[in-house]
Length: 349
Image (cartoon, rainbow, N blue to C red; front, side, top):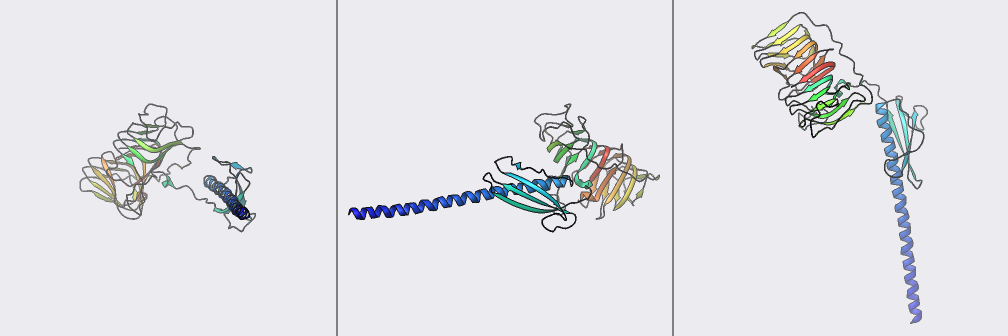
């Protein structure tokens, strides 16, 4: 019996030892897999950050030393290769990013990315409104959407910007709001997207009533270099539109004055006006699929009328406001337009 018992104990010891050895190997494999995943994450993070940096500055060059992750002990290092010196063949006009991630155990993983550098100029449609001074009041709002889908669902790209750092350069009151970000000049003081109290008369570049909001506020690293409006010369013919309305062909005009509920109907093409003024419920309407570009050289007053863009595509109705133009715009329930006036003073109601 004693011999049999000892035999059973030996057998059990062999089985337990086998299980223990298998568990240790499984644990080691799991640790190696986790280290490899951590190194992979670090490599992907380094590549992603380098791509972001290149999108802002095509001349960006990554640091030569290892960079630590914000959380954890992993690091990454990114190398940038031009066409001709890259370890793989890449097309002209591209660069090759090789990001090496390293886990705390020394495990390494690499990620390679080919990035095409673009020299295209920044679109004027990057901002819904870009002006030196903006006054948004009377329950007015600035929104965005994908025109291939329709006005809904609401977007978050109705961004507004100014190079100014003066307090109150952008003033939002009367329940108005912006479904996008607000950017101000470098060094300008900013506040919260949704302040709990009024920021008017403060040192902030953006003044808001307590019930007014935007998605965010921030200061730019450098001023935006959008060019001033170079308007063609206005014409000498003044236009007066009354209750019966009028169809206006593209061309250069003097003053456009519409009143008595009259409708000014525009189509695609280029218009130049010395001034535009709508009173008495007059309407400025656009229809068609070819954009209308409207230059204004002096005054732009739509406070007594409304805009009506039947295409519902903002890029089809583009207002170009020359230097020192003072603009008052009443949008109505739904206005789809782009207003560009980096040296203009714009008031939206």
